[in-house]
Amino acid sequence: MHTNTFPEGYEHSFDPARVDVELVWRTLASLYWSPNVRRDIVETALAHSIALGVYSADSGQVAYARVVSDRATFAWVCDVFVLEAHRGKGIAHAIISALHAHPDLQTVRRWMLGTADAHEIYKACGYTTLVETGRLMDRRNPPERWQDAEPVTS
Image (cartoon, rainbow, N blue to C red; front, side, top):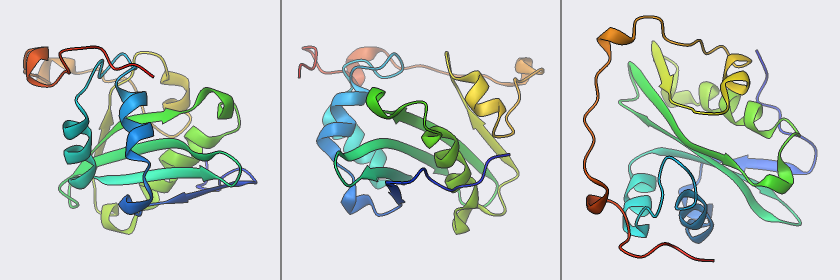
């Protein structure tokens, strides 16, 4: 299991006021799990989650993650990203460790997340692939409820 030590030159903060909402929105709108997500939805999610930003003195915000939780028994890790220029430095592992160490999440008995392409990162942080998926269910709203009508552009 990794520690929540961030690489030299990077710092993290749980202060939502530090989050570069424009960067987070534009990045999330370009990712497979939230294509064209509306900015107001990103802002609402930030306001109702435990959010973590990672910052570099020379680049500003370079990574983001948030946890949706009752702060007692369950936590869902989501919207994790590290900007491409900063990948491969251990930032993602440090993010997950910092989330696990958050004082409001110490009694959580089940942490969950979904990923299409980062299994090895999460396995190194103690996550396993679910065996009993027959218990889990989901319901998805149609994209027009949460997407912008026009694609988000840079």
